[in-house]
Amino acid sequence: MAKRGEKTVKKHQVMQVLPAGAWGIKSSFRSLVALLFAFLVVAAIYLRQSNEQVFQHANGRHDAISSGGCNLFSGKWVYDNKSYPLYKERECTFMSDQLACEKFGRKDLNYQFWRWQPHQCDLPRFNATALLERLRNKRLVFVGDSLNRNQWISMICLVDSAIPPAFKSMHNNGSINVFKAKEYNATIEFYWSPLLVESNSDDPVNHRVPDRIVRVEAIEKHARHWTDADILIFNTYLWWRRHQMKVLWGSFESPEDGIYKTVKLPRVYEMALQTWARWLEVHVNRNKTLLFFMSMSPTHEMADKWGGTSGENCYGETEPVMKEGYAGDGVSPRMMRAVESVLGELKTRGLNVQMINITQLSDYRKEGHPSIYRKHWETITQQQLSNPKTFSDCIHWCLPGVPDLWNQILYAYILQLNPITE
Image 1 (cartoon, rainbow, N blue to C red):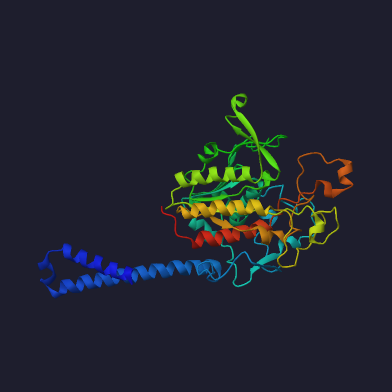
Image 2: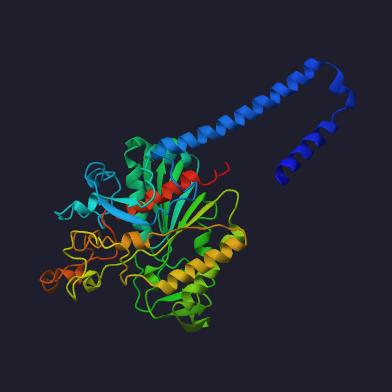
């Protein structure tokens, strides 16, 4: 009621600015003003309904994200070989050999046919054209580790078929990889920053080091590459999976002049997240940029957790875990709480970072990993060949597969959240 009253007061204030005699010159003038006002009201209603219809058309039906009546992250996997997969592996122009499981010999392809069904609503079906229109003249940037790169490749594959070959390109320049949809002047990018803050693992190729070191208070070297992005999707977890980490106060250019201290997890993780959060708070344009944080992607390295044979892992798995509520040990609840705490603090300061909670729904998919069906960058020994589980990748995900769902959920949020200003 107070807001309605305020609007009425403002309307009278506008009227009082006009000369008093102007309101009594002719009744036709008053009619013209009323007609113009009515036109503006009708136009506003029409535009609002049009936007809602676009969302409903793109998604099949209006999703409960808008009404708050549905949790997209709570549901079950349903086998659906009629409408899935959303694309074919061999038809994705920029598919990664690390994720192309069918190409590298996987015969059981059922992992491609599972659809996520939320309990109380339907997940919007991905519409590449609708997303590309939303991204026109904009930058969407994934920032993080190889799992965010996994999701980036998935997103490119999802939009690939909607763009003619002459109107798309890929450019790699060090840590940043840029896919461009030329007709839309839109880019979908990935920036390699596995710990978000600076570290000695920042080289996009040579990043495996025996003694990992982080500068938990330094992020600008990375952040300057995505300061002006319109949509930012962050993740960081995989590279923090250890009991402690060496922290450097100083510079990697002059490491001998720095101060080093070993800090335990999750404290060092919290320190890095706080640096990231401070950067967002100062540099992000809150009227322009949409912010997302992907929760932890679970690993499946211990089969006994889902009732398998002790000592086995995801190798040879062909079905998801069907027990609702299943939770393995491939993630750290303490680290997840640290993320939630930092995002909560940001929200109290007026900056919203939407968490995309992929952890539980991905945990069911023990069969979705590449295991041995991928390009191997190192020579596989005879001893490894005799025991395939020893070189199985139970961390990343085959495509088409689980990351496509992550992007379906991200897509729903992007189309539903407030428009980004031009």
